[in-house]
Structures are given as C-alpha cells and as structure tokens.
Image 1 (cartoon, helix red, strand yellow):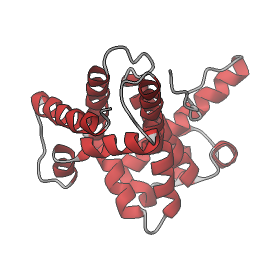
Image 2 (image 1 turned 30 degrees about the horizontal axis):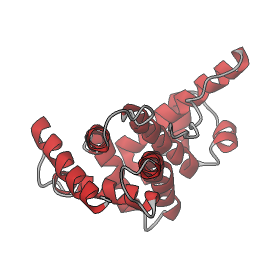
Image 3 (image 1 turned 180 degrees about the horizontal axis):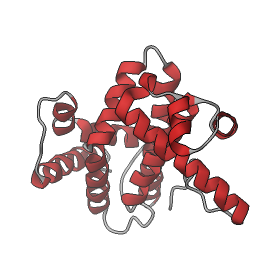
Image 4 (image 1 turned 30 degrees about the vertical axis):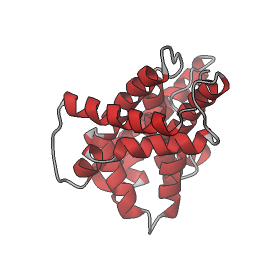
Length: 216
C-alpha cells in the first residue's frame, strides 16, 4: 500500500561513481536553494547566489530543474517526500483512527515548523505575480501528501472499513481539517507557540469529524 512518490533531484540513489557525484552536486544546489528561498523569499533569491553557494552552474540548473521555478518545485517536493516518509503510511498498520492520528500528527507538526510556515507565507505573497510558483507548491507539496493518504483511504474502502466516493477529495478534506484553528492562528501570527497536547487534540478532533463522515 506504499504510495510511491517520484524523488526530486538530489534525493535518488546513484548507480555509479559519476552518478554519485552528479547527485551530490544536485543535493548541494537544492540545499542552497532552500536556504536562499527561506532567507530572501522567491523573488529575492537569485540563481547567481544559489550557484555561488552550491558550486553549481546555470547549465546544470537549466538541465535538471528548468530554472528558478523548477528549483523551487524541487525544494517543495523534497519536503513533501520527507513528510510522507515520516507519516508511516507505507506500513499503515492499525485501525483507521490510529493511522490517521499518527499521520495527522506528523503532517501538522510539519505544517507548524517555522520553515514550512515561511515558505507558505512566501507562496501566498508571490503567487499572484508568479503563478508557476504557486502551482509548483501545490503540485509538489500538498498534492503529494494528498496522494499518499488517498492510497491509504482506497485500501480501507476496499476492505469495507470506510466509505469514500472520491479518495483524493476526501484526503484533501482531511488535510484542511488539520489546518483549522491551531495552524491558521499560527500562520496568521496570532500565536507563536503550541503544546504537544494541543497538537494531539487538534488532530484527534479532525480524525473524529473526518471518520464520522465516511462511516458506512
């Protein structure tokens, strides 16, 4: 039931020494790009600074990423892959309540990380001027996490554990339930800290509401 996600450049296993060197170079580029985007925002980060900090080249960025928007997409994809791997959906043992609670805690913890909040705020600010950035953020970030959960919901539906007419839409709804309250307040700067108990309670409430709507 593991949801296979295509890995962004810099996160795949190389097959030989030359491949390892190329992959290491791409990893440095993505790492430096992430640092630049977080520090300066999408508009403020320049390819020249990313190249200077990573030892890459414009030709390499053009070949593997297509440009700055593609590089941003790769940074977001890398984060999404890390989130999916950390949710343990690949195993998905336990009841839907247990699995969704664990998944929700991992995802909400990521959403509340300062770097994730910074990137999201930046996308909201830059989206109207740079639609490709907003599209990359949605497709490479949110949509990847939705796809992983949708695979899990599909399996539960087939086993008769819940009823879902559209697993992708329902997975998307669950992620939005997670963002209500605690996350929205933090995103808007209305609060700066939260306790572990508050995070767990937010997820538990979302799981209860979500599963009540999918009960057979």
